[in-house]
Length: 449
Image 1 (spheres, rainbow, N blue to C red):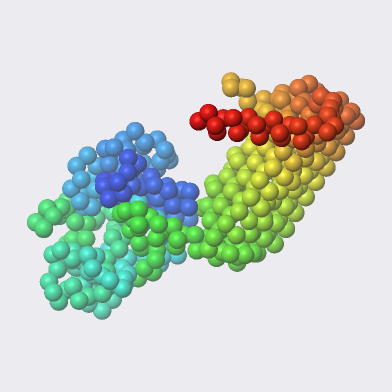
Image 2 (image 1 turned 180 degrees about the horizontal axis):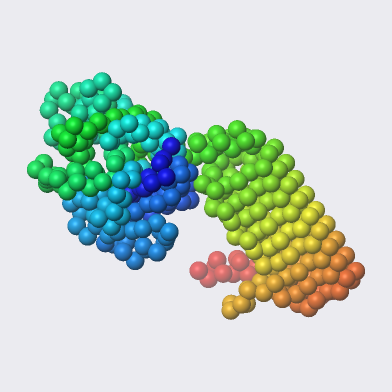
């Protein structure tokens, strides 16, 4: 557990050139949330309320988004040790413990953070290590028993040191006042000419201070440097969210084809069909059936609702209990009230569909005139015939009916039937003559060409 004075430094100034992107690396999204925000959320969950985020110059205009956390700009990228030095000069942590984490390591769990903080209680520094299958370019933790004597970067390691499989994640916690002195004493006499934060361990040992370590899982310490890393992290995150959903009472018929967001919320006894995507801001009630091939974002689905297949809920969609949204239906900024049904091939935007109302196949709310979005109101128990066009702003009263193919341009009072189509005319025995004329025209064009 953190002490009341524990603060954090989040290193987020990396260039991220291997992402091949105009977006700063730490702002790329994992399960709908920027990488750096995953890290800040993890710190908050571990009880660490104060953090200083170290940013690169290209993010100087985004400092406000990190409030209430402090930010500092690392104008020269001279290594992790230099970044921590810049942060400590701004933060002035005094005797408090300082946890250093990385914005491009978003899968670090609260349990592991707490394990590291607990390990630190009787030492000057606690380092988080891990054992990847391929240690490769990772720095190595050189230990004596339970203590860390030093950390050596792979590029500077001897062949014997490279055999060590206990690797450095980069995450550590240290006494803030001592850490300030150590980072000031760092040298850049290495192959990269950078100030390595890892060298503070050797400096601490020279001062007679104790350095310890704990180990984390490989999956949670994946650093994201390119798009392939981001995809690998997304897979891990999705598996975590899927497992949590199923443990909470959600049936995922084909878990690997369902994609969740960091803030997706489910009630109990929810069934989700395959190939369904939950974007940000989706809340699902209890006893809901989602039939698959759906896409949701910033939407609320009430208890016992039935949705899909092939339904899309866009921002502002609100489905009350027992409502039904069927195949190829799109709902945007609309309230579908209790027991209402929009079951086939319809678009309902900027609207209210009253309790028990039924919206027929092919119906659309014509809500946009090129300049303004206008509202459609459909009353309780209304029946909207197939292929009705509701030209907003317009209202259909309680219990009213619109005939199939009706274009509704003015309000329909309660318990009224609205029809607007022209009378049908049948011309008997004309079909053969029509086909003959069309065939002759076609043959004439082919001859001329």
